[in-house]
Image (tube, rainbow, N blue to C red; front, side, top):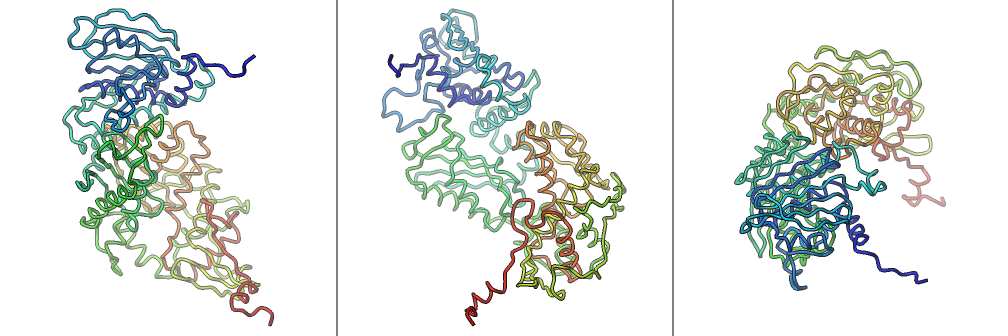
Length: 610
């Protein structure tokens, strides 16, 4: 018996579906692109249960006649290309002819369509490859496609679908990409009968960003454009201060198609180099136009990757247009002038609101210039962490001026790790101390991160992080995805000592904030936490989410590289190192200390053998 068999058409379509249809959002993407290619000016997307139960796309495009409907579910059936030469100049959103065939092989699909010149429409059904005859019906000009019960005959695929909230988050993301790249379209998105977005045709891209991401982000965007060497670039870029914890807010479009390209993303990163923190991602909406012959979009089934004929040229063009705009713009953050030593705008441009800037200026200029106070002890002393001693009960919602005490211990104790208490700070970033057989270099930020992280973990095991009520609520706008993330993870914020309440449509207000993070900006911290929750998804293990947010909190509360420490503060930090568990690495895995032996030192100075 022959081992090789020719697969039937439905099996071929199911294999193609594995490449093209990953989840309900993939269906929405493919059908939206088909509607755009059909010349639609108005498209409505209706979804139930995150697309698991129903996806309905209604457009007013050119429609299909009975002959087209008879072929629509056939593999590699498409109206976009005819001959091989067409692949060199793709100008449509879709072109593979796999989408409807793939969708029809894994779900119940119904299509009703009518062309402008016809007096009646036609309909066809497909139940996981079992197609009906094309039948006449009534209907408006355009096409309506209903996709029900995705993967219902494929339990192995269906079990990998996430909760309706998570799946809806992915659908909103694909809807957002289409909305940004096609501002001429009238677009509506509904979920379970509730209107999520209503976008009118003729809105500018900036107007759409305001609707989709909030007014505060849209108002601060810088606009720039360049038309050079056959390539047109238009960009809306945020100032460095608005950089986010994830790359979710970097939207790249090529001829209206959303793409991901490492050359372009690297150019964006390079444009902001020195202006943002290394672990932050700039907010950029980048629209590129170039002849289709200069790139290949036929690289991946999802059409999200492209291959440029001259990637270096693209990189240099994107880098130039972004960098030129940043260099020509005032990136200062409004706020009060520093009370002590002045710092340049370049140092202060990446630090958030004016209120936060003032706190940072004060911290950098005077916080470490005097002997350790009770406030320093509260920040640096975590002596009991990891020893098993019982920590004092912390108040959960004290007045704004009343901060919880933290365990401290006397500075007169001698350190076992030090030799005659000999140590010094190098470049306000590293502590160099003598050990019994050489010397040790301590990264002050990484070590303090670990100490704070372990202390917060200890507090969470005993309850919630101690918090303080803010004198005035800090309100901020959120996207639908961020709002859903907050709703699904309220308990996480309670654990962290953060009380957040609704404050109007798509607005939240922070009422309480962790006392330990009194130097951090509440709005920036909560926004970054929400971004992380959106990126991870609502179905991520809750314990993992807690520790990822604790990582972020420890990083923000820890002493920074470049901050001068007094001898007492260095002494206290090194004492805590000997007490807290796992201090050899920071929460992100970087080493906190590096040891050098006398033998290694003598080898470097060619003293070996004497």
